Image (tube, rainbow, N blue to C red):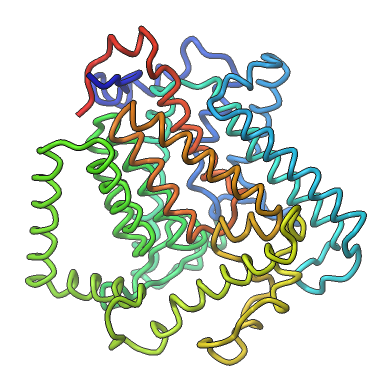
Length: 446
């Protein structure tokens, strides 16, 4: 019998009672961390511009992390994978110090309006804060609390999506920007341009959040949250989110096999194929996704000719930087500084390198290798592998979560983004009691 730790109350007592339970029996540090999780999808909307975008989740999470660290002292090291996290944090600090003493200290142009040193300190701080948030969440919150907070977070994101669709339909998308500092990105994967990003900056980011929510809800057997998460995956029009679902399903079937999973997987594929043939929007959506991946000839327009190439070019530039700076990278936030020296323009439109003031790798693995070195990348991969090992013993949902994250990072904007570390912390929390006597008393997972 597989152990299933800490079943979520969202499937037994309802979401409202579970939300009330978040505040009972926990201290204010936990409450602040939980509020940070609830507001996690607001990575663009509700941010404050103070020279850089300050997010509500950062403010709440920052106070919560400091409070937990002062109160519990060494308690943060209870988190699964804490040694790997501390090693990565140490590499970040050493890399930044080396960059200060051995690298460029002035210049940078419009990409670095506050100067190279300020920017280095800022992005080093982002990195250390993200890692500290992982430790705080993974060591103090329970699976029940996290599942409930995530359930509310995805509902707030869905509510924003509804508002986004309504104001867009009336031609008033500027209201979101004026009132909430939001933005609206359109996508045409269903044949007509419609919004796709919700409260985040781009649809790919919403897709990452949505697929990880779906896996957390699947583990908790919370059907409503699972449905909302899958809806937001489709709304995001994100190719990598769909790949994340595929990777999660494959991991469940291969690493936790059962006859039922094979039957359900076959049925889903059959229904999807039938829908692709019978429903034009579904046909257009699948065609667009396969074209973006380069799996079928492009008949959809010039933008699709370089969609995959543009992403691979940015990632290749990052890995090329890492080859020249293998030990400590080029420094936190300095991918853009060296971008033009490593970009291969083959297959890209003219002037591609000048399209953005501050280009990004759009690939966590490439960014981490470029800015912090190959050892840092190996530590991240080791953490993912370590969490996957324990998640395989815990539940399908936990294993699917780690698999979805591992794939989602291929097209994610920055490794320091809090969404990455909160969902990885969730995987650590879910596997906290695997193998313990308490876990063996719980109900078996599917």
